[in-house]
Length: 421
Image (cartoon, rainbow, N blue to C red; front, side, top):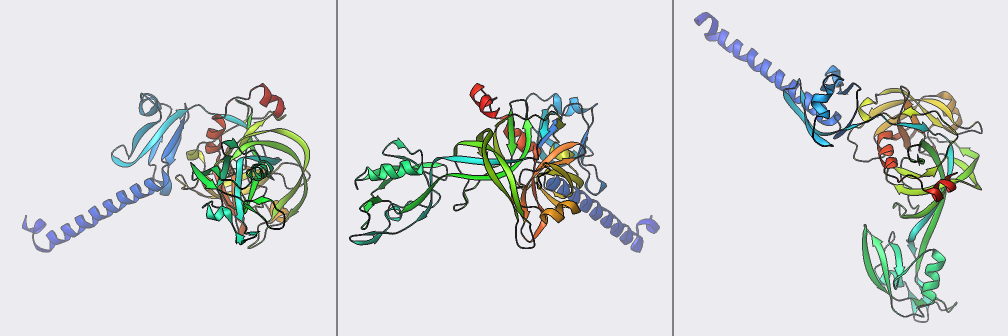
């Protein structure tokens, strides 16, 4: 006993045991850290299909097979269900929400579409001083209105356009008005008085407003379950306020590609198009995950939509329209996947690797937002942003997010279907 546990032997044994325990603790904590970062907060489980949540560094943190899926997921009483994910079914790694769903299919897009969006109310985009008999004054600033405020009504009358708002101001004859504005998702009542401009003798408010916008983007997919389409992968922002434009109505317009400015280091290029006057559909939603509406496509080939844990770093393809040849497929690489991205538009980092596309566009350009990303025969996401200092790279959104929003849109009624047709 003295030989084994006495003196130096005991000290060596304790040192080795300490090193072993420390190593095991480091491994366990490392796995938990990797799991916390890489296991999604919410997971969609596709019925009757195998999947692995994470195998970072060769460590399979959690998997569900066809045989045991019924026990681990489908027998829960309600969905979504919060589940504790464990390493080797022993060590708790993370609490996550798991919901069960059937595989869904969509028709991939890639074609350009024009956007004509009309706001719900008018947006304040700037102020100006008005020259009156008593000097310069800005009534809007005095009333504590702010850039980005959305003017909804004047004296209880809903504002329908910029010209309508101007008409209501003229009819006030300088009397006190009560204006309802939307600010930070809250309705605020503001007391307001116009002033008479010295030279024109017209009543002015001292503010600039916007009631519409136009542009172009790329269709991500068509959802035949409710005849909706999804595009952009990010909302339409007001160019001056950088706020999401509140949409009252909108049109998916025909567009013809008229030119292209290439991207380069420090400069983002753009697709140039002309709205030709025809309409392909109607817009129904301007959302943080993209633009949605009702449209009908002649294309019939549907592909499955991937859930986030099925997406892998590596080769993929995007479909986009950058020439008169229409939608074409180009090679890219998915370089990073953020399972729990803080921004819904920045779930993945992608890199354009196709020399054909690089020669044409220099990388990602404005107008390519919404371009569908295909990997292993599945729709995995859509292009959303470009890196200004490296236009070969950019961000993308999970297709799963966009499909979830699309599925919430009511099925097209007769009027919407006729407009979409």
